[in-house]
Image (tube, rainbow, N blue to C red; front, side, top):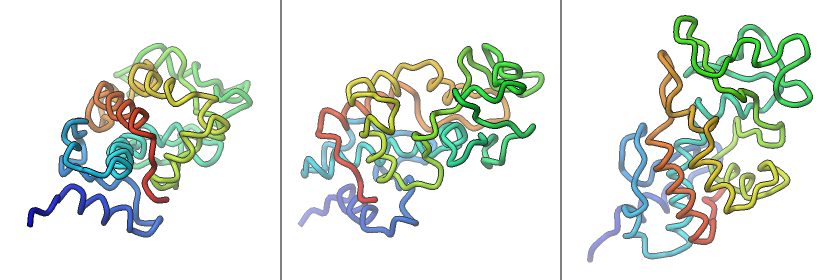
Length: 205
């Protein structure tokens, strides 16, 4: 009898306690890589395959490049160790910082390599309702499907947001001293598209 190792790994992953399951990779590829959509074809159960796409995408969503700007509180985190931002800044009413310490004061249109300061023209924190820090991949999945907690986005618009948005794309070009998000933005976009078109099923919380 042939054993589908990919399905076995995925079922084992979703059975883990919520405090253990974060970004369990079902694909067998390295943690800093993303599996192709085609590589999940051997998972015969459509619901399991859909959830597996998101679990793989979870390697990106739970990386420091994403979590640092989706904090549980009002202070961003930084670096690969997700330390609290220094100097001490806060979210502010619009996510761009307090009046006296706006994000664009330090974060310019592009990375400033001499000072190792990341940059993007619209550098800011994700809204408070989009906090992912401390959550499992399953919890993030349920949250990202909810317009009240995902920036009022439809599932279709999530594909464009993750796969094409230039601020999201910074995660794969973060500059010296910071580890990029796993894989590429194109691969992440393909995974979220496959997840949406396959029913947007979530791993167990």
